[in-house]
Length: 122
Length: 285
Image (cartoon, rainbow over the protein chains, first blue to last red):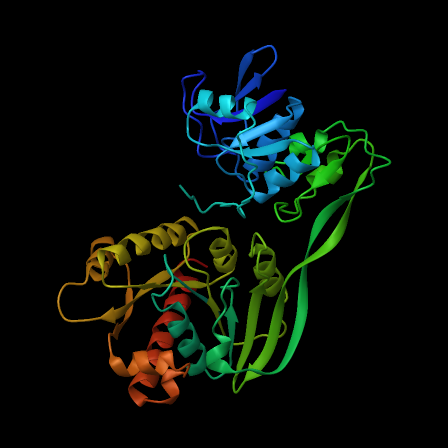
């Protein structure tokens, strides 16, 4: 299974990013081959619609699951249209979240926010 | 003569000034361009209201013609399109209606549809024509609503007062574009100065004749007044921080009709602004 996680640096020791659409990098991790690839998020500087562009990037990498602390409604629409499972992080450690996913202990992300759309957020 | 009333933040008194200025003129028009929260109509209670919808163009796709080349997606700087599972998705709310995706589509798979984003209400209240722009909840930008109002002004009025949205963003630029004069309303605080600076920079950039109305004036230092003196900005009026004025305004009443001193204050404001515009026409024809 291929998994995407928004992360703050190109390292397995890095923390999970608070933002899906405007994270600096994505980790694409293959649970079978245990290969990890870090992608630059070209959506980070978008004037608007960062979540849409970011979701397109994730979909284009043919992942089966996305683990993120939160996700906006436009991005979620794309992720769901692509039949990608949307999981909620348990903490900000990449390794803890991957381990929980493999053990089947991650819950689905149910709470989809309406997006910040130029109004920041934290 | 078009007078735009603006401020760097909400709550400084734009509507108070706009409504009373328009009401103090004999032949005038009041336009509420604060389309996200228009409230000037509450003071005027206009009658004979005619409502027109405001539309923007949104792309629609013919899935049979779409080849999945993604030229539209690459073009859109607002990321309003995505291509998922051999299917083009369009996010209407994110679209800024530039039409670029339709022009760039090599398969002619994209065309445009009208989408309602708001409305314009025109009515009359005594000697004032009252026009209110309304952006529907959840719609991205009020600019098309403001454009629809200012492009279609029927008949000439001696005075048109444009009540602008707060801040100095696109909607404000659209509102002041054709104004002959910009009236900046400021509060007597450091924060007020910060907000005044924003709109002062904007009207300077647009080379608009301008002046400041100092609102909520009390005894003691007024940082906004100090800023005006330092920059050599005309102070058109000082509105006192008064219980009576605040009460009238909070009750949705037009102050000039309730107390002669307010009638005098706003009439004189209108005269000073008119003179300012006339002088400007002589010195910069």
